[in-house]
Image (cartoon, rainbow, N blue to C red; front, top):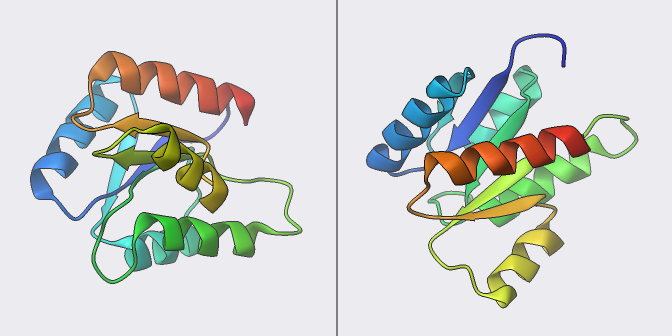
Length: 127
């Protein structure tokens, strides 16, 4: 993969942001943070990211709505950014909702480094 390996973390919870950023930096990524879905959508309009970690429940615009907006904007483009859902619930139903919104993978909080590494490797290979 060419260019910077940059990941956008969209999460309104500061502790979650810090944890995700630490893990991602350990894995060798540059990290930027968006505090809600609207900020995530705006960041993606400005910058190219290798992937997005998208919290499902955020103020102003939640992760589902943000993902749908991003996918609509990508229509007609060759590239689509891998979006990994961060959720507190991981029932099959939750996973289905995430996939229907256009997310590529689902990670349950609290996030662990091994799971994050595996999930990123998988979605980046697929992309």
